[in-house]
Image (cartoon, rainbow, N blue to C red; front, side):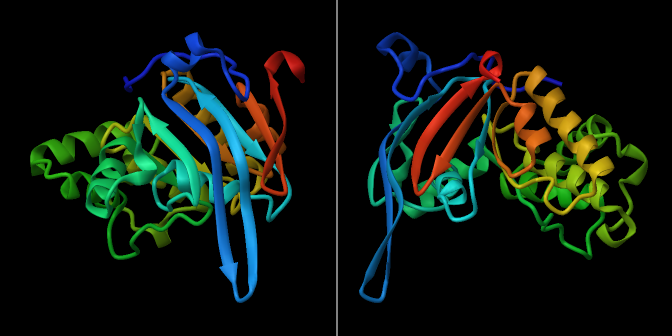
Length: 250
């Protein structure tokens, strides 16, 4: 199965101009603040880094350090208080709501800790939802869902509803759904958080395979094995990046 983008390599927090030109995502001085009564909570405090096409990055750190906030900004679910998120040079953090929705549909795949599958729909029908939203014809939706179910090893489960699937199977359906519109980038927030060790390992293997096939992946996790599968680990604390490591640094 092919995805947009190629393989990438390690990139530092503030890359050279040459590397920046090749980056898929450029984050510059990114800030996000929330007001809670009289208090201002500074969730992100001026982050800067690049993501290369085909790169697999894990974002780690203690609860409340800003990991999920960062993922929401990268996925254009939320808007920054300051700074930029540039996607191939386009400031996606400044997109109007309708354009942001269209951008997400065609460029970003989301995987969450809870699977968010519709309980009344089969595995195949859940995968086809974003395809229908994108205006894909019925026959093409069916072909794409078959392709994806085979890819995640669930072609024998296409008629099963979520309650008839294990947690690991539900997460694999959710990953297939995230890939339906051939996104440029896959964002995952604690994708193994609801799974036991064995089924979590199956999901980690699937992320490894997606990366080998060229998918750009950014994952927020407390799972050391999932983080260990990434090319680069960004460690956060109190809304800041405190350390970055590549495979050779671990």
